[in-house]
Image (cartoon, rainbow, N blue to C red; front, side):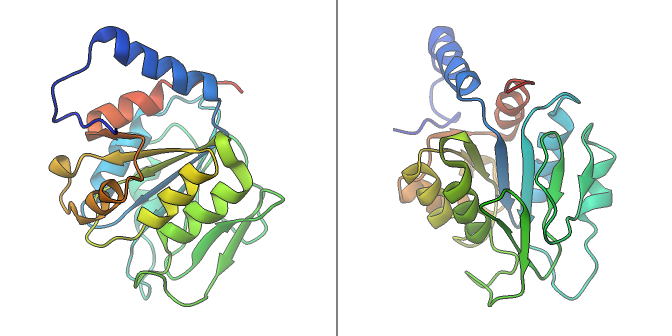
Length: 213
């Protein structure tokens, strides 16, 4: 069963064992999705990443489609890694953060490049977290870590199911720590979480991932 940090804490031995399991996995891509209440948590996570972080990071946040995205400048100065809005066809490189442009779905192609799409909204959202998670799972399999943050709908829950079905790992923000708990709660209720962490623990676990693959 997934574990919430609101429950009694595990023993130090169990906590260390979980950290070793994640380190052995050697994730090549981390995908992060969030909506209402998730941006501040996202800033915390990115600020925790070391400059030698080995995996690529791809982010979908629900933003107004008719306004320029403020997210890249808002997070870039907090992050030791380069943060960009990618062009279609751009190669997904380790140690780089890719933020979905407002109004575009962001997907992972089989050749590990970025695809951008103006297809219909999914779960009322474009970009959609489900679209990114599902496409990334199909390409990266067990080398994928997906993280779902605060949000006010159920976007991301189905995507996390696909991540786990294809061998990847799913972390979910503890709904009790979320400004909008509906999104993480939907994933948990569907059994789509490997672990449930508050923002500080999410940041700690993410920063502890290996710095080389």
